[in-house]
Length: 129
Image (cartoon, rainbow, N blue to C red; front, side, top):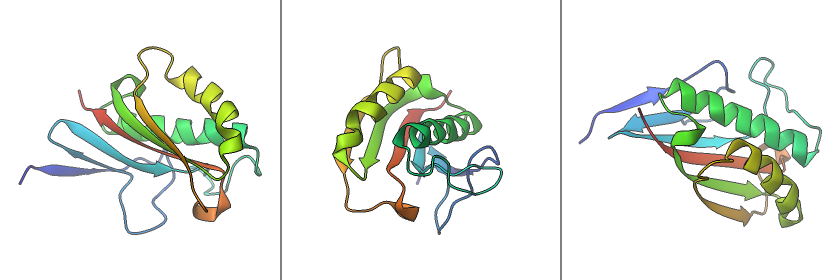
């Protein structure tokens, strides 16, 4: 079995369940889904505004990637979960700002419900190094 390392940073929200912010193994970083929690306060950001939520989610994801020895440029694949696919355009526009050059592969799906009733959650797999 390959060595694995648990990744944690205070620059992203602490896990709200029995999981890690990310796990590093075999040259890859597997990032758990991020929701729009302010890492300093643990409070939700955006008050239901999907644009504000998306910015916070991507900022949180960026912090986890950096702590794990990667970056947004190292992301190979993202999984985007939306409470309402009608928000796709707004989320896509903001997402495009973070992944402007050589964006990763992506899955985007509408789900019945997300933790804390947020509107967006994003997970990622990235290269380390």
